[in-house]
Image (cartoon, rainbow, N blue to C red; front, top):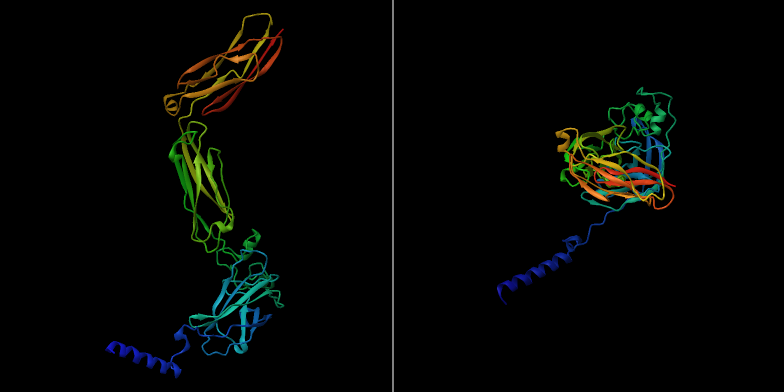
Length: 411
C-alpha cells in the first residue's frame, strides 16, 4: 500500500470516530438548523401609552430560543385587490415579554386606518436565518376615545387624525409641504406625499420641416417620462391643443410604470398647412393636480396651395333636343402669395369624379406644378329631359377632399 492510500484510510477512520462521538454538527452533512416558527394566537386592537397612542397587539406563542434576534413584521390591506403588496412595517422588532408584539397605528411609513381590514404577517430572525411566515387577516384598529382637541392646529381634530392614520402633532404628516387639511380639500390622501412621481424629461420638441404624409424622419419623435417615485405610477392623459400633433399609444394602467422605469410616448407632426405651427402637449399623471406642459413646434412643407372655385356651377336650363354641350369652367390653382410661401409648396395632384350622370369634368386627374393654374371644363351633356343635380368630388393630395355642387335642367 503506498503512502497516499495509507493517508486516506487514516483520515476515514478519524472522521468515523469524530462523527460517532458527536463532535461534528449535523449540518456538516447538509442538514439545516431548525428554529421555532412564530405562532400567532390572537390579535387585539388596544390603546398604547405615549404618542404611539393605539394599534394592534399580536399575541404569539413565544420563542424561548436565545438565538432569536428580532421579528420581521409586514402588513397589507385585506381586500379583493390582487395587486395589493405587503409593506414592511419593521424588520427589527424585539421580542416582548410573553411573546407580545405591539404594532403602533403608524411608524412614519405605514399607517393603520380605522374602518379598514388588514393582514399581518410575522416571522422570526435568527441571525441570517429566517422562519416561515405566520399570517392573520381580517384585523382592524379601533381608535380609543380622544379629547376633542386639535394639537397641531391644522383644522382636523385629533380623533379624526388618529382614525385617518395621521399624526395629530404634525400639520403635514407626509412632509410634502402641504398641510393635511389642504390636501383633504383637494381630495388627496394626506398620507401620500403630494410630489410628482412621474417626471417629464422632455420639455420641448422642434420637429423642423415636415409634410402631411409623414415621410420625414424628424417629424416622428417622443416624450420621455420617468417614474422617480417609490410606488407604481399612472399616466392619466396626454393631449395636444392642435390636431397636427398626434399622440401615440401610452400605458394607462398603474402596473405599467413601476419605480425607476421610463416610458417613451410617440408624437408625430402631420401639418395640414404650410408655415410655422406651434402648440402645447399636456401630460397629466396620477401624482397631483399639476399638469406638465411640453412645447412643440414644426414647419409645414411640401404642401400644395389648393384653391378651387367656384363652389357651385349652375348650367341653367337647356333644350333637351339641343345637340350642343353646355360648358362651364372649374378653376384649380396652385399659386402662392410670395417666394417664401412657394418654397414650402409642392405640386398638386388631384382627381375629379362626378356623382351625377350627364355632367362630367374634362379631366379625371392631373398633377398641377407650383405657381400654376388650370381651368377644367365641366360638360353638361343632358342626354335626356329632366333635372340634373349632384357634385364634383375632388381628392387633392395634401389638401384633403373638396366638393363643387353642379346643377342643370333639360326640357
